[in-house]
Length: 475
Image (tube, rainbow, N blue to C red):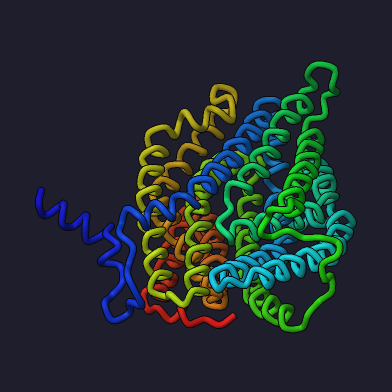
């Protein structure tokens, strides 16, 4: 027992996380450090888990209310939509790093200027991409291998949800700025409220309850679009308040400044490379699965629901880690950035282990939420196998997500982009294709390729983090 206690202390005590020669001052005690991380992480986790759960409720209502074809048609739009949105994800990565660093340095005027630049960029690029997404919706669905029985549903869903892309962009920009300051309670209220609206509207519109018409997939799309409008209104209100650290006004300077544009552009370029690699890899991977047929895509969609839920726990912890890493680098305390990065990693691994046990134990019950296992036994069995595969990699997944968040918080986006290029852009789709078709492993083969992808990401990101050069990244 004494050995176990000592091992536990060595692993989780902050006093062992930073070497003596790297310390720039006092290191917070373990209780204080974990409390600081959790105060930021818990609202973010609640926000993201709530959103994931409500997305699951949406999928359950679609799968049970309409059928597997509807579930597949909604799912197949995810990667094309995220590929379109990757431009803004890259921008948000840059804004997070810069605003967190400015907050740590006490330069809040610069933090507000960064947010204004993000809003202006979002309006211009968001409008252009909205037009393109609506105009080329059907060719894009055909390109991602939507089968004939779902292509019309998928096109309609994609067009409706893309119509509010600008508002989604501006909402995400405001929310990442708030997270960079550690204001995760604000983003929690914004996004959870919007998802409650989405779930309520889905309940009314999918099957046509009360005096509402039955709209099926189209109803899901309208519910998402209306919820996006609600989220934007709440996010905008959070930065119009007089007491907001990120308050914006019409009388502010609303023009681009070269130094700020240069900083944002530098980080956005690296973030764009990361997101393009990430989204392209996911898109190619999704196309491999779509080739297997609508039933396999439905089973994949069910398992991805649980993966999305597990992802949110790591994303919540990662949001806290990114903010704390960036803020402490701004305070010239790279030692604390290292410490909070390691705190986040340990929290993520523990969380992933708990989720693995949950997924393994309740995989059949989880699958039965989405689909009638008696009516569709093959789909239910296939989905349960995928959940079992997922359970084996959850601690790895949560750890590598937080590691990536730590590096992004420092501005070391180029290495994260390289990692995504190798692991997600190349390994996942290539191995997925090989396992599915030449080796004949089918849908489980596609998910086995995910294990290799996640392990490769963990090794590359951990190696970079351990060397510590990321603490010297310049914005």
